[in-house]
Image (tube, rainbow, N blue to C red; front, top):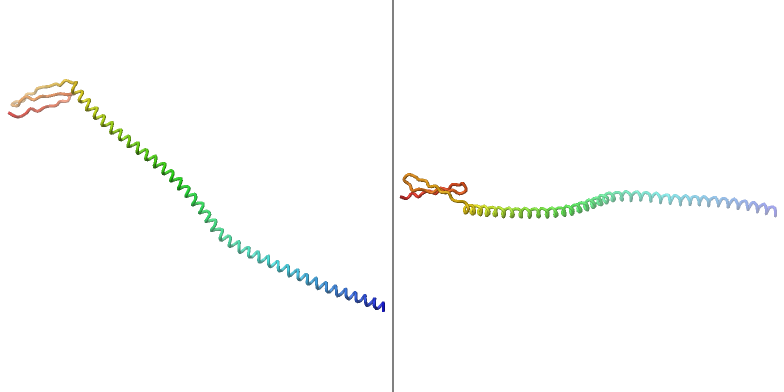
Length: 167
């Protein structure tokens, strides 16, 4: 019996061992299937993540283009505002220069008018002084049946005083 027991025990051990191997194999298959299931789950998750990522990137690119355009337009607007401010400053400077030039022209015209008046006054004084200083030449002209008239000469300019025609 002991041999049988030992045989039986050995058979039993071998059988247990076969059963354990079978269980282990099934467990390994289960683990492998669990691993495969787990790997397929994560693979599916990664694929879903990649798909969502692509969708978000497309949405981002759609939004990004208008955002880039808006940024470019904002930049252009700021540049135009700066140019406008610079042009306004330049315009104000030029207006001030123009005003100063007009004032200078008005001053020159006033000075010119004053000089013309002074010239007229000086000519009048010269003419008065020359009349006082130059002798008057007189000639008497006789006309037939008329009283004699006087001819006066100033600065070689002849003034003729007509004789009266009264009888």
